[in-house]
Image (cartoon, rainbow, N blue to C red):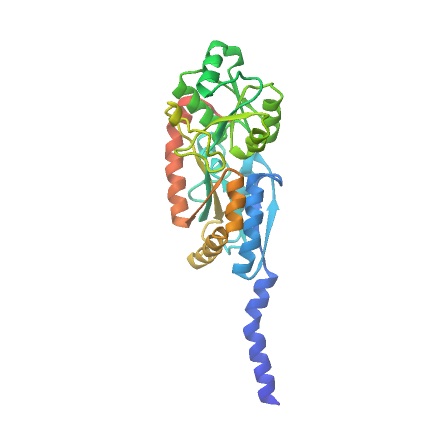
Length: 317
């Protein structure tokens, strides 16, 4: 009897960590409303990661301040790997040059866990612009300066400054029109209220396929897989590029073994063909890299954007 009791106790003790793991819930926080590309990426990752990690993984949306609000909270959370933020690079590499009172230090206050995707931006013309290629549209804008406007999903975003670099490289003064999100900007583009838009391809891809707008260029070094017939800016003689990424971050001080465990789950998830196709469909590129490489990429982008942002004189309110 005692042997049986001892065996049962031993079995229960060994099973306890697995039960606790199942009971714990990892949260991937998104600083944006449901439905966008960040939200979609996080949800497809969570489904795969919970299998690899052997625990619940859920996505929680806490929109505010273009993703900066939840990052300000993340730095104060326990470093046990149970709270992570999927952040666009703009909050890490653009915001520090724009805000005097940013509620976090992008280098010191987080643990980089995994790079998830990389992406470029689409330069899209609506019915408010004349027919023709990008150079034709830009020539029209130069001749009609009161109409030389481009829309983006918000002031101080990577698309905002990607449009600014395009303006400088093309020698055409363009006025930035900031919207509260890509969807309202795309609607005004379709309605002819603004002739040009610079934003993630996902915002205008379906409208482009439906013939409502025309994606004239992408801002990356190479063509976008979702838009194989659309040339880059450089292919059209405009020496300008802009790209960005989504990264998974944790609070400061996360143990290396915890970071490695989560990163392996991310890497395994991104190998799944169905997840890759879902990401490609958004005009994004599944491009995993472990935490140290994410940190290096972030530092590189932070340095790259310093000069053009400071030269622009733009300062966020």
